[in-house]
Image (cartoon, rainbow, N blue to C red; front, side, top):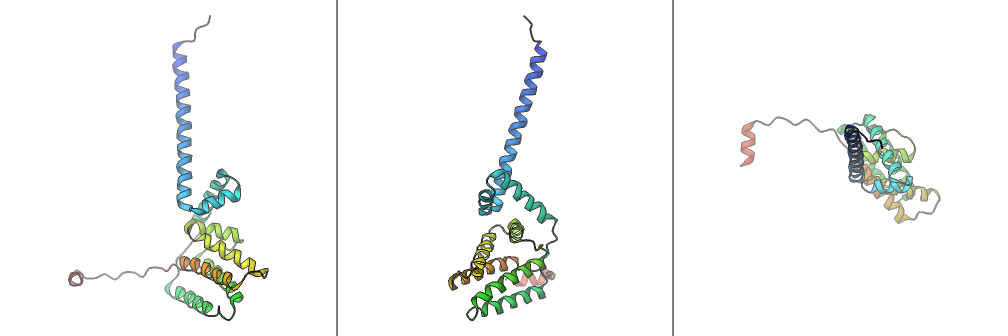
Length: 198
């Protein structure tokens, strides 16, 4: 009989243990990454898993979104721009009673204009929603709901209550995107701070 030298058994055991440790590390990292994506994207994670038919494809898509948005040059609005957008929204909302169908179209256009001004590219809807989901994962469901109602409206099957809901959903996204550059804080003398504390 041929005996295997002890050193080969030790080397083989070390290789097997190293492979097991590497596999355990890989799966732990994968689980950690899945948890991070689930926590960050919330319900958008589940929607993406359902849409793409599995966690692996969904997680790959979500990571690609993060990388894509990371390369964008998203900027907050100047105060004057934010005021202009707010005024446009208020005017739009005031026209709802007279023209609910027209206001939904205008709300969609105003949201797109705001996204463009902030630096989001204007691809198809799914691309826009995907981009929004990276920094605003809790509000992307509102954007999807508004878009679904707008499509129903195009087919002539949305009622006035649905149109009102669409405007509410667009408003939620609008408010989230209406990020304004912070005004520089003025230095307050220590004496003033002491007096304000009293």
